[in-house]
Image (tube, rainbow, N blue to C red; front, side, top):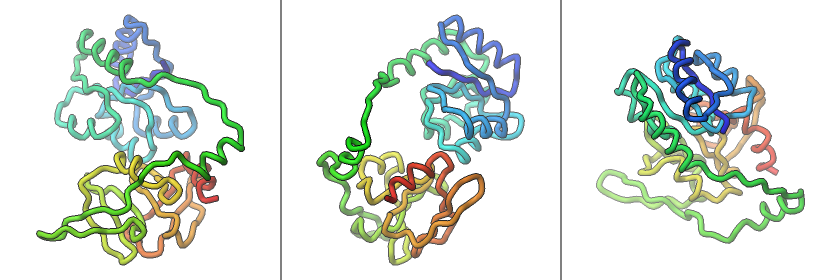
Length: 251
């Protein structure tokens, strides 16, 4: 298990490290700020599990998730309980209040171990990958979405949607007519519902329709900015770690 600790109070970090060692969990690295963590995640493979304090010396650790798409499981460690709801919207296993109790920590680690998928190495050559892309497993994807407009329900066909995005804790679709509608779902759920040859999740906040892309421009930190035909309410940026896969998806 590859584990890191993000904690601005070094004595607390060392105490947690000792407690984990007693549970036969070795930590590979300790980080101490939002800025340091973002820089580390940009240039290193993400761990299996993160023990993450919420209030760091230079801000809330939620800012890390706004800059980087974190794929690791997270166990939050904090002296404050008011962030619990926000924490569980992320890939959170547990929420431990300081001072951390040894029994609570052991239960949290066990939760992770029970949920963690077994790692299997699968080798595919280029032809295999090509076949999977051209002939995906036969399954049904969403053809339309129902949205509430006042007291009415409106059906929107999938071909009429330029993008899906999250904003202020809500999930929205944006149409080719330049209208946005609130959905009763999350981007995580949409990953299993959208046809992957048409829609791609470019970052933590956006899915884009390949047919809605008007232009692509080089952006800072080796990222790409996407220009859509109608949507222009905020910048649409391909996350740095997704640029390579995004370019392959385009082709």
